[in-house]
Image (tube, rainbow, N blue to C red):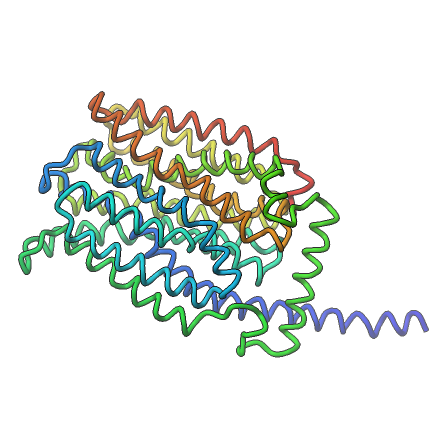
Length: 443
């Protein structure tokens, strides 16, 4: 009788697993392409001032420090609104909150085309950051409602590959826009760039109201059986996490958890490297002797292409091996090596681009490799505030990194010293990753 029961249960278990895998394919195909495109424009709107500065600084007679402060003040608004935005998402749902935020930051990004004074530049960058603040931590929180821990590495890798892809597409596109549309309709090339790259964000925000579902229960494209299996697996994942680690279940307990603060420092170090690449790559390439904005755009494609491929591969590897720490630490160290190699290239474009490709791959991959770690310490009840807190604390690097580089460049005439400092911070962050308990995060 026992054997008969066993032979009947196996096909049932296998059949359920097949249904579950099919459900995850549906979820991935329904959610990831849309949020991927949204994040692509999110990041493009955030960092396209890196290309705009190639013309803006001369046209408006601004210094590198003005640019660095304007690029960085975005993150003051970001830090102020990250936690409130995630709390609103928890209450009103992803569809309404994310759609509204996208429309708002799209309008702020478009409005940059009208700036004439540093004050207006700072104000609009602050507002863009304020409205963008809820998007990335909101999506990280949103994924916890659809995917268990064991699948989030590759999902985050796929989603976050929009960052290097925004450079892969956005760099030559920005260069082409600034060249092709220069002085058309009485507008400079950089003004056209802000208009043409901000408008799609507003359109995507409106589409968000139609495309996104707030939770599994609202997904009409899933069967009742698929919904039940997905909800059961998420519940099992939550139970397993509580058994392995002491999770924080309230926002107050998040503030008391030293692991959360350790991770905040690590994320700050990760983003110091990311924003050094995102905001200064065009200027670094220009310093190699390339003057045409079109040429700078096409050369920028190489590091971003390498980063896109590496990011997807490292996410799959982390999930397959159920290993998180070394995938993050190793990526950060590779980025440090690449950045130092580019500095020591002595103006050799080939060596410099190889170094920048390693730096972009390692630094940018740090983002998706980081986010599976906090889930081990945040219970579902505390996830909204905890994820937003980590995101906002880490994003202070977005202010420090571009402002530090711009300030040091104005003082010394070179970015080398600043890039050494940033490389040192990323190296320190990589060492701190190994302080995180392996048995807790390797899931």
